[in-house]
Image (cartoon, rainbow, N blue to C red; front, side, top):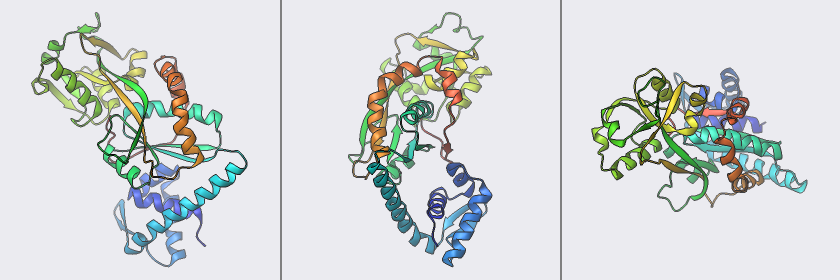
Length: 329
């Protein structure tokens, strides 16, 4: 007998190609995932995965089963959604692919407000690379994503979600910290910690420098790190200064671990977008969330720029699935 939970674990394991990441994504233990797969393989009488150390790959039988499993799960979701609609309820799982650091901080806040209105919706944020989220939206494995820039693809629909600020942070004892101001030319002599070149914060910063006639190649980049939290920690240790999302820095600023410094003539902002593939079929929860973003956009902006929101961010516990590919923020 094939159970819905078996299909769910199988699909997640096929996508993650790693039982540990599958367990994190589904909020299960790794042994539980392994046992579910073994039991499912025994029930079907065939191996679905080839094991290679910690990673797994679909076997030939698994490749055949995967599209059928996805189709079956979609049918079950439609049944659940239709029956709940008859009763006027909104329920089900709402999975969102997130590529941005702002998304990691904004989505839990928005998700908490959404669940106050629709408490039967299970909210999941999957932090992945930009290219991965794009692929999953186009092949309909994900129905909603969050990007920090519009991609060149006509098959995706964008809704402005939030205007993020990219700020300069420095160590508390830095000479700029007292006055809170620096000139663009001052950046040339300063050790700078950066995200990777394709990161959204890096793109915004480099574009602003070029508008000021400054070649980004002339910067003294002393360290490149894969996420904003690590960058903030490096700044706190005095290794250099950095440009990161205000949302990623808000805790460090509030706790006095780092200082924000304004760069004269540089106001770094970027639009964060909610993204979906309009060709997909959406559940009531997915449709309702898409509209909810528009309704709550102003309220969300007011709340996340209020430092008191830190207590809200700390109190919300929404499952976050980290992929092996770093997020592009």
